[in-house]
Length: 542
Image (cartoon, rainbow, N blue to C red):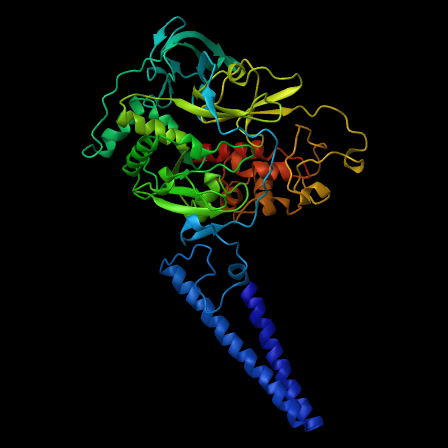
């Protein structure tokens, strides 16, 4: 559309020049003016030829699969974006980099210090509700009072009995708590002081068939570590993904440093990558951070059997969904798998150590956390035991402040989370709102002068306004680095327009991808909730 408009303009200008030449020649016979106008016309024709040639080169390069990856591009002349792209750090080594223009970093107080201490949790839980699509009442295979080892099956999905969910620690089952409509909310285990592991004999990765490998992961609880796009669900055992994606950095507010997390676990991480490579007909992709002052861990940069993809940009650059969109977008009936770094390590340890090791390094973050740091613990740890004493009127979040879930001290971390955040409740009335002189606060708007300064913020949960009319503002596109119209998509979901939902790219998204849009939303719409409702509708139709 842009090129057609340009060509129309240039042709019109050429015709105008020709007419001007004729008119000028008839009226005044000025040879200098004639030559000048003819020179302009010739330059325009020359530019048209160059522009058409340049477009044809780009089209041929795309059809031939030549991947320029955000360089100036395969072109006869450099683009402005290529000329003014940020300088890449030396550790990238000249590799192609995906430069993301849209996004926004929320820099909050309470980042975890780079020290790791032992966690104090004694109780852990398996939370069936963490797994989208699971039967509300899965088959629980243990009873209160039973002793289990780490890796023992505690429940399975009645709809898919081959997918097993296992104990993260050894100990005594002390509760099977129920939620709404008698759904299973928690299977709680009082952990032993010394964790005992179920003995596992790994299959030979070199000789095992894909079917044998899948059955091994299903039986030993590792299959639940994998999530499928679209829908963000645990995949079916029969599915073969187009590709597997792992992001090696997290750009969310106060997110843990995965370089620290993977330290000393390189062998298990590499083995996990090797396993995943045998499960896909495509490639295993690693997303690497090109925007940091320091190079990624050598565990990531030296990984073998994978394709490394560098990204430079603000949050949500670290979201695996954003990386999928820029590497190999989901189209049609495509299915891709995603995993976190620590999930890959757990899969690897099944083969390197012969045990289901659900140990996790968790970042305790937030301005209301007494001493933000990293702790060694296990999946599903009790939140109150890890976070310790906190002030009243403070919200606990399993995950980050944008896409995490509110919890109480008595509850447990969600299965895929490796961060706990504390944030002050914003339940105090603000007279005159933003019109009055106020402290610095995070915002994507330049209304606040603090947005121009490089500072950290002490945020709270106040949304600074009520739900409003859902108007088109263009805010979402400024913070979502994807070729998607999120506001149109949300409206399509609200009216249950299935065709438009699919056409507008719903299959590429999960909640964390639109969390920053929700933060920026002037209309105060619950975009993550709306998106999940749309995804569930699409999943039912699939």
